[in-house]
Each structure stands twice: as structure tokens, then as C-alpha cells.
Image 1 (spheres, rainbow over the protein chains, first blue to last red):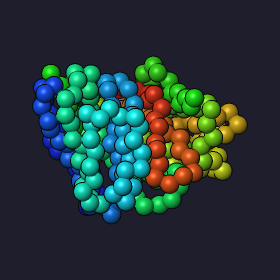
Image 2 (image 1 turned 120 degrees about the vertical axis):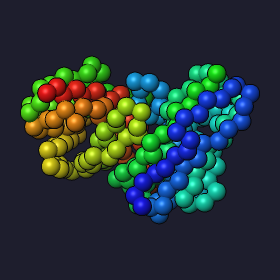
Image 3 (image 1 turned 90 degrees about the vertical axis):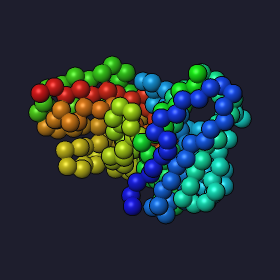
Image 4 (image 1 turned 180 degrees about the horizontal axis):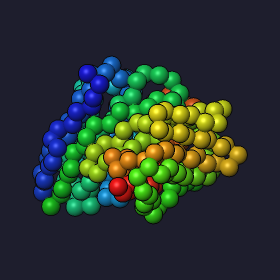
Amino acid sequence: DTEVTQTPKHLVMGMTNKKSLKCEQHMGHRAMYWYKQKAKKPPELMFVYSYEKLSINESVPSRFSPECPNSSLLNLHLHALQPEDSALYLCASSPPLAGGKDTQYFGPGTRLTVL
Amino acid sequence: SQKIEQNSEALNIQEGKTATLTCNYTNYSPAYLQWYRQDPGRGPVFLLLIRENEKEKRKERLKVTFDTTLKQSLFHITASQPADSATYLCAPSGNTGFQKLVFGTGTRLLVSP
């Protein structure tokens, strides 16, 4: 299995809702990432998990809460979002190699709309 | 602060021609430079990685160069096809583990028949 899957594909939520995005990979990768991408912009890193521990948080507001229950799963819990949080949320994973040559494998993304 | 710039205008070329995309970076000394392709509404897909001590890397119709003096990478697609139409992103990366990838602004390539 050489893919990263994300569910749901689309999500519409109100500002008072709580929802979660899910990401899964079965490639044995030990680093997993969340990115946010607005229209016509490049993906922006939000969080990095390394061996199931949060290693990078790019000063993301606390209304986004990541979770890595095991080495194959990554969740992003959403609460009290704002309309400007509407974007494509991408999950990625990379092999457990040292150094910047870690290529990342991206999922298809979840298109989030906050009303 | 680190800056990674790609041609912001879309690049329109005819089928069969060579497309050349540019990635310039400042305030950065990457050990590697990666190129990704992204189709609308989809996640980026890795294409090629070049190391700082490599001048050129090829894969089928793709060629990447890396000039650390000019702080620039060029990405070429030869014999371009309409199916090559997509946004291409460059991502310089350093030498530490579990990379924090920072993408360039992306260049949209349109190949017309």
C-alpha cells in the first residue's frame, strides 16, 4: 500500500461545531504532517509528528488540535473555527530517514468550508 | 527571512516544446531541493530531488538543475504534453531529520495541443 488516505473528502461546518479530519498511511512512515492550503497558494506546514510525538507546531491556533494515536493514523480535531480557516487540509507522511532528503507522500486532502 | 520564489505568472507553452520553470531562494542554504507536481484539488506528488553537490538530475522527460551560487533551481519538461499541465512546486530542504518542507509559490504550467 503506497498511498495516504484522508477522510472526509469534503466537510462543511459551522463555527460552533466540533469535527475531526482523519489521515492514514500503511507505508511504515514514522513522520506525519498536516498542511493547510488556501486557493492559489502553496501548502503551509501546520504540524509535524515524529514517532507519534509532536515535534513541530507552526504556531497554529489552539482551535486546531492534532493527535497521532499510532504510527499509521493522524487526526486533526477542529473546534470553533472561523470562516478564514476554510481551505484544503493536506496530510503527508515520510519515511524514517535522516536528513532533508525525506520526500513526502501527500493525501488527496479534505476540502473544509466553515460557515 | 527565507524566501522561495517561482514564476508567479502561468507558463503557457505548446505541446512538444520544452517548459522551463524557475525556483529562486534567498537567506537559505538548502542541502536538497525537491520538486512536486500538484493538480487542482489534489495533494502534491513528488517528482525529483537534487542534492547540493549535484548539478543536474534527470528522470524520463524531466530534468532539474541546482546552482547553489545563483541560489536557483531550474526544472525542465521536454517534449511537453497537455497532461503535464499542473502547478509545479519547489521545496528546498536542509539537513535535519523529519523535514519541515517550505514550498515555493508554485508555477502553473499550461500545455496546449
